[in-house]
Length: 150
Image (cartoon, rainbow, N blue to C red; front, side, top):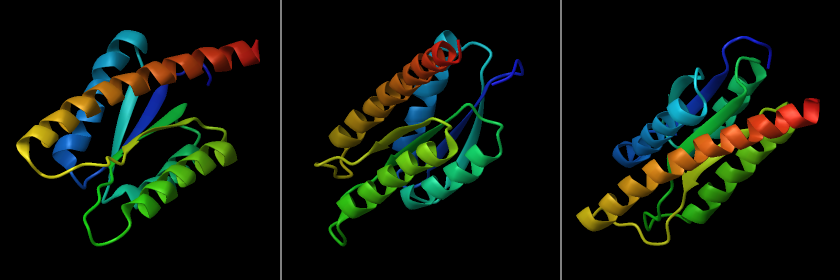
């Protein structure tokens, strides 16, 4: 990145938005401490499957030093959710490899998720934690990239 203000794109899937949005909260709160001055641009996609394409388009703009993607892919009992989760993660990895823009995944596929208060509360808190961990990952890769350039 040049000496312009660093920017991160944050993509969030809207399925289970009340839970997924907690990743942005965790990321933003931690980024304020460990990535001061970094701007976060938020982009919403309908579901997890749309995230890799949007991530690639954002990466190709050259505006972002990293892209964070948050989604919750659950077993709805109708289809094999593991195929969706695998496609999403594979797609995000491919975006990073093709564009050389780091892509960070806060895309979770729980083994046990039901829309009951106890589990929703657990995942609500878990996404805050994972969002914060993503900010730490951005900081780590930022440092590593500076070391590589040196």
